[in-house]
Image (cartoon, rainbow, N blue to C red; front, side, top):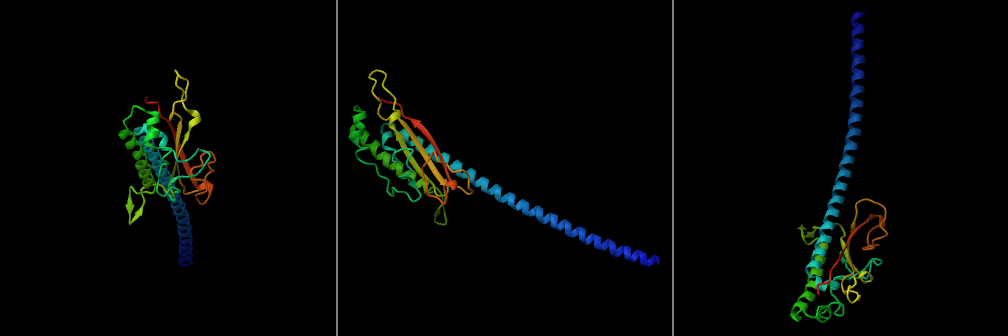
Length: 229
């Protein structure tokens, strides 16, 4: 009897140990699944952060280009105003080959504002605008980095807009006349997010160009150009 009791106790202990192992495995699997989900969320957040950082760099890039060529600053805006979403540069650009209308940016137009500028300098300033817009367009397409023949150097579906608000021009304190080109320039960049968020209705650059409006990310910055007369 004593031997039989010990044997039955042994088998009962083995049975309980197997259940414990199974429970432990279940807990481990649940934990690993949670960890996998956390890693996915972390990678998504990292990508979102990376895209926003790239967008900020591109905003600063264009702001620097306008400042460097400020006597032709009024040539850069190609998006009528903040209440329009086109035209834009970058992905599926409606300006496939960025051009600046002669009436908006020409040697004579620049000389009208800065009559003391040499004509050759004004011509260079006007051509620099087109070169800057083309360079920005290519950067928005990710041309800065290529992998396996694909441009991957920027955000997903990057698009850029530049608008100008002439109603906010500064006034000459002597003549009380509006100073040409001293209005508010707004540079906007839109791109494709990785997860839905609240739709941005205030900034329209790239509107309706993505799978849904709550997937569109957009940031902007404004700057003024002082009179250099």
